[in-house]
Image 1: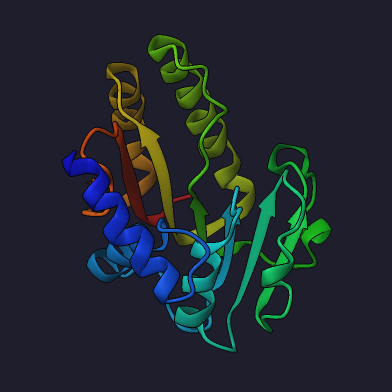
Image 2: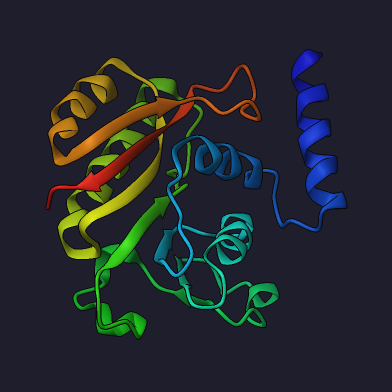
Length: 198
C-alpha cells in the first residue's frame, strides 16, 4: 500500500498548490539539483499535457522568458492566459521549421516528459519507450541551441542504458535521476544533459 501514500501526498500537494499534475515535483527537484532553467530562457516542452511542467517553467524563467508547449492533445486552455506561455496542438516530429512555433531561434532548454501509449506488455513498452527517446534525441540538433540544457523521461531497460551511454558525448554534463516523487514501482528515470555540444 505504500505507493498509494506517496501518490496521495504529491497528488494532494499538487491540488493544494494549484498545479495541473503531480509531475511538477519531478521537474522542480531536477531543476533545484541541476539548475536546468534560468531567468529569460526560451524553453520548449515536448508532450506538455496537462501542463504542470509549463506552470513551473513559466514561473522560473520569468516574464522575459518564454515557454512553448507542444502536444498532440487539444490545447489546455488553462495555460492560455499565462503571458510567457504558448501552447500548440502539433506533433513534434512534424515540425519542419521553428517558425511554426513563432520562434526565430533555437531553444535554451528542451524538456520532454513524454511517454508512449502503453500496451501493458513490458517488453513491447520498453521498445516503444526507447524508440520515442531515440526520436527525441534525434530532434535536438534542430531544437536545442549549442550550450543548451535537456531533460527527458526514460523507461529503464538494458537497451536504454546502452543507448544513453552513446549520447553522453553530446553534452558536457550528463546525469541520471529518479526523483523522490516517482512511485517506487516505476521504472522511469530522467536524463539531464547540460551544455549541448551540437
